[in-house]
Length: 199
Image (cartoon, rainbow, N blue to C red; front, side, top):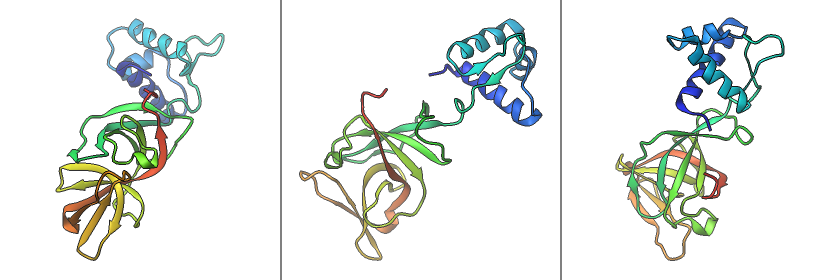
């Protein structure tokens, strides 16, 4: 994982390359980030090189190349979601590098809290991949926002035109039924589950 400053440097290099169709020099990076010293830019660039995020060709010490793909697929980890009783809606934002797994816009991770989805293999502490969208089909596992403040991961079922059931996958728990006006779909579970020991 990168530090915040390393990520800023990598993002600056990537932006420079896209806008100028060439790679920046160390001096360019220092200017882009408002650094007073070129040596500070050099320090972070060296760290990125050691971590395999950039390449500096032999004989071109001041020329920087991003290693293809390494900065493409950082997925936001936006917090914890209830797989039990609803929790307050997520607020925290971090980043988890899943470059080998996903590459699609509007996807994010949530960390599971609770055991209401354990019969589907979604365990307390696991990370799940969510596609951000506002519509869902019956039977899909969704991120549902209840009363605009409590987020939960459950199977979605329309009971009728005016009510929604949020169904746990745990035989010890009962479905939660709400007026449809109280429930907003925030995203759909894509089936990717990362074991709690991943982080």
